Length: 370
Image 1 (tube, rainbow, N blue to C red):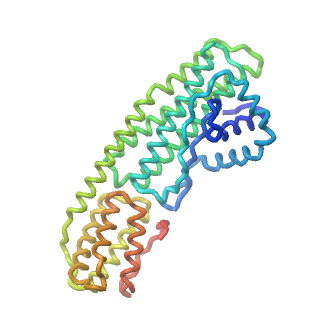
Image 2 (image 1 turned 30 degrees about the vertical axis):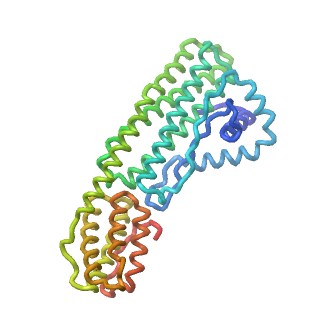
Image 3 (image 1 turned 180 degrees about the vertical axis):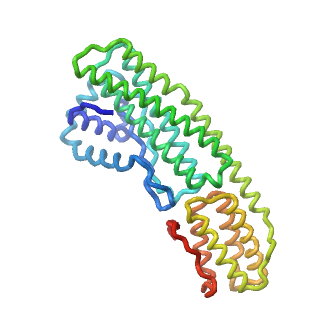
């Protein structure tokens, strides 16, 4: 949206955003959540780079605070409508340190923030248009809220994309709910974009010195109503999704936990060889950035076999290796990918020297940290 703001006004708005959480004043504007950072968990870089945008805005705001404080105070004092409560931004967390359950919690918080930011934007629009007139200050006031809503929605969309790419193939039973949430967010984004473009037209009209038509104000009100229409339903979709994923994790754990050995190694040497193959299969499965139920079942079956092999042939030297295998398998089943991958690396170290006739598989796409 092309704005013809003066530098002073732009700095003022940035500072208002930055001071929203720290000042605690009722006139503070909502701060946009931090975007997902690129990770080493085979999550592709998501664009636009909201993190860079937010970082740049914060840096610029910090430098401008002293010189712009008087201007900001004047801008806040001239605001004719009281600001509604602001949402609490989600702190940034590297996605490669998150389990499926932790990502779900972040998504739930992000969607709730998107709903809150959209509610604030629509409330600001309703309040400023209630007298069927608009001033330049009121337009700038609404633009702050629209920008915050856009950022919050984008953040939630990015987290959902990352979740689908990392855990989607394993938690496929809940993907319908993910798609529905994405559709709800897309609808919110479309309505906010309409509100944004209408504000742009209003801004242009006022800068040209023309009077605003009543239909123009009605368009703002209509766009705001459309943006807020399905917000409760969006939050309900998130709850349904969480219920499906919770049940899916328990079902996977029960299914994997019931797998019995079907080909127990005949001696310790064979057990160790199969144990290296167990680790190799895990690394290969993670190599494409996805992990599905077929891979989990194959790994769990091999794990059951070598677990029985260690119990039978391991003796004192390999005591505890059987339990480590079971922990790795159950962490995979429960979507605890960081724990499972770290456990597999530690387990491999405990196996000792790799058999000379068992070369490591080629893993060109494996970018996870060991």
